[in-house]
Structures are given as C-alpha cells and as structure tokens.
Length: 292
Image (tube, rainbow, N blue to C red):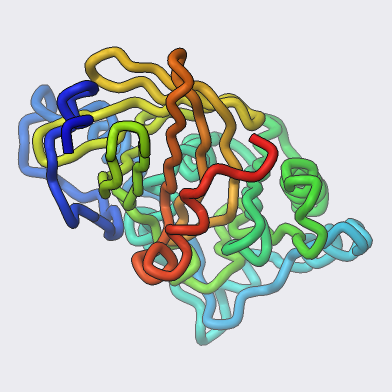
C-alpha cells in the first residue's frame, strides 16, 4: 500500500490490545515509575463497598430527579456494609475507578464525591461527576452528578438516562460494570492513500488519545468537549473534523471520527469498538456520512 510511506504508517495487521488495568506494586524504585503508577500507589489504602444487589440510583430525561436523590439518601454505606453480601475491596480491584481519568478524579477527592455514567452505557455516551469540596449530603451529590451526566447526553439520545456508579465509598453498580480496558482497538481508513488498518488507542490525558502500532506512536487524537477533533500523524499530516460519541465498552468511550486534511483527503477512524462490532459494522461506519 503506497500510502503508508506518505504519513509514516508501517504495515502491521491484526493488532488489537484489550484488557483491564489493575494497578499494583511494580517492584521498581519510585524514581523509575511513571507518575500514574506513583499516584496510584497512594490510593491503595482506599476501600469501596460492593454489593451483589446494589441500589439503583438512576434517572432518564422523563424521570423525577428527586426520586434518584432520595434513593441516594437511603443508600447509607454504613448500613449497607452490614449486609451479608457486602464486601469491602481495595480500589485497585475496581479497574474503572483506578484507570479512567474520571475515576481518578473521583478517587483523588478529599471530601464527598459521586460519579454517574450514561445508561444503558453501550449507547449513551455521557459522564457526570460531583466533587463539591465541602460537606454535602448524598441526595445533593446524586442530583449534581446525574444532572451533569444527563446534560452531557447527545441531543439524539432519546432513550438514554444516567446511573450513579459510585457515591462516597459505595459502588452502586455490579462490580463487573467497573471493568476498564487499558488499550482499545482503533480502525483507521484513509481511502485516498489505500490505508485500512487496525491500531491501538491509549488514553493520554483528558481529550487526548495516542494511536500506536508495534513500532510506536502513529498519531495523536485531540478532542474538545464538543464534536471537534484533530488527528495529527507522527510525520506531520493533520486532519480536522468531528467525532460522534457512541457509548462505553469496558469503561472506554467508543466513537466514530470523520476528518479532512488540508488537501481534501478524508479520514475515518473507529475507536473503542469490540471485534464483533467491527466485523459486522466497520464497512458501514467507515463510509463518509451523507451530507459531508
């Protein structure tokens, strides 16, 4: 494929890495560890309560926020911790909290805290977090996290709501809902250069992803809070366009990106989708949307 030489994309086929992040002691001297590893070590003393049947604290666009607020108020961690089914686990056993940027913000909070995510998560790409920094009751925490989450839902997400996933030291979803993929698959297509290949996408800070292959970093994806996005390749070619958020897969946002270069070349990029979804839908999703 001659186009690989133009933007420095050596051919590596079938590359896709997924999994869960579990942060633990590395055995390395502190000055040889990454900042993320050092920070994560300080969180190991935190413990969260998990339940087989956690309380549902959720809202959709038609529901009364007060119902969810009262459900949060009734979810007293001390009382719930006394249940036979209750367990207290270290936060490094909850990959989404220890691995995602939003989860890390939640864990770093020194006071009351709550975090909500779109529901159902596969098709509702939104997050909301409440970190008031002062004494705040669970009802108010739930109101703020859920309201900010529903406000972040796309306008066309008519069947979506939001659900609290954690509040203070209580997990309010099933434990497996806090899975988190450290790296996720990315499918890249630049038809004018004959490029159609798989890469790995890794989070590199808020709104920033690195695309890698076996040789190293191929491109950087930088997104704003809205739809605008830039894809810049290691050798300088730059594409700008928009991203369409789809939902969450193992804690990671799945999205479709459509962008153009200065010369009019079009790029399509699928990030975060599962292999079976790509097998069934990639051809349709990679096609440039009608109307540009």
